[in-house]
Length: 277
Image (cartoon, rainbow, N blue to C red):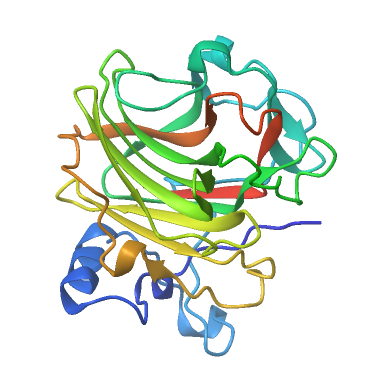
C-alpha cells in the first residue's frame, strides 16, 4: 500500500541547485513547523502533515476523483481513481479535443494553490490500456503525454505552464515543458530516452515572486524510505519562453493529452500527488 510521507525542508536543499535557486527556494517556503528535539527521530527534520496548506492524495478511493476542480471534462471523460492510481483513458482524440497547445485547452483536474507552493506528482506518465505501468511503444512518432499543469485561476484565460512525460514525436520517452502565454505556446523537451519507463516524478516549486522552478527524477517508488534526487529541468529549472503573469492563486493539477490519433488509445497514470502552499 502506498503511503505518502511528509515533505521536510531538506527537500528544498538539492545537490543540483545553484546558489540562486537555493536562495529562491528558501524564500519560497517559510512555514516549516519545527518540532522539539525530543520528538524528532535521529537525523530527521519532519514537518507536521496536519498543518494548514499540506495536502496529499494517493488515489485510494475507487471511482471519481474527489474534490478536484475540473476544466473541460468533456474532452477526456474517462478519468478516475483505479487501484490506487489516477487513470485517464484517452481513446478518442478527434479534432485534437484533448490537446494542450496554443489556444487548445484539454482537460485538467486541479487544486487551487497560493504562491509560494510545491507540487509533486509521483510516477506520472503514460501506459497501455492493459497495464498503466507499461508504456506504449512509440511506433509512428506519436505525441502522447501525461503530467502536471499550472493554470491561471481563470480558465477562460489561455495562460498555463506544464511539464508532461511520454512520447514527443521523434523524442520518445521524454519530458516536455511548455509555457503558453495568451494562447501562444513555447515548448521543448529534455531529450529522447531520458524517461525510459515513460513515467517520472515531477516537482514544481512556485516562488514568492510567482516564478516556477521545475524538477524531475526517475520514479522513486520507495520515496517513503529513499531520499529523492531531483534534477533541474534542462539543468536550469526553467521552461522555454516567458512564464505567464500569474496572480496570487493558480490551479495546479493533472493532464493527459495527445496530438493526432497516432498511438491512441493509451492511459495517463499517476501514483500520488503532494501539495504544500
